[in-house]
Image (cartoon, rainbow, N blue to C red):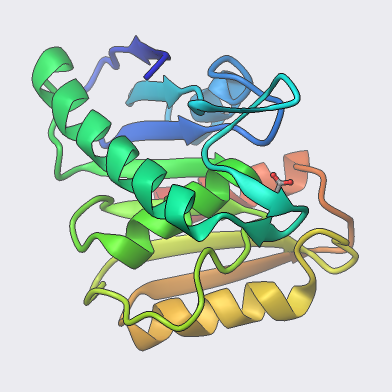
Length: 200
Ligand code: MLT
C-alpha cells in the first residue's frame, strides 16, 4: 500500500497509524500525528480503492452503504500490510494506535471488529458502524476514542452511540466525545483526542 513512514524519536511510544477520509491521502493527517505525540513513529497509509478518482479504504455502494465483501477484503489487506510494515520498519506490531477520519475511521473500526490484535487502541474521528450483526473479538483493555458531531449528516449521533455500545460489549474502553458540529474534523476534537491519548 502507498504510505509514508516517519520514524519517531522514542521506540517505546506507539506507532500512530494514520487513515485519511474519502478523497484524502497519506499526507493529510500528518499534522495531527504531531499534535498527538511528536515522539511517536507515524505510518500513514493511502487507501487502495478509487471512487471517481478519490482514494478510499474500501468500496461503497452509496453514501453510507458499504460493499461488505470489499470491506472484509480491504480490512484483511490493511492488517497484513501492518504485519509487513512492522518487519520492514522495525516497529512493535503490538503497539499500533490508529488515528482515522471518516472513511479512515471506518476501516480502523473494521480492524477492531474483525481482528483481536490488529490495534492496541484507536482514535476514530466521525466513524460509522462498519458492519452489523457480527460477533466482535474480545477487545478487553483496548482503548477507543470516538469523536462525533451532533449535526453530522453522514454519521448520525445514533450511529456513534451504537458503535460505542458494540465496542463496549466486546469489552473495549470507549470514550465518546461530542462536538456541536457536522462531519468536519475540528481542532477541538483533535485536542480532546490528544488529551485522551496522554492519559493512556
Ligand atoms: C464512508 O463511506 O466510509 C463514509 O460514508 C464516510 C465517508 O464519506 O468517507
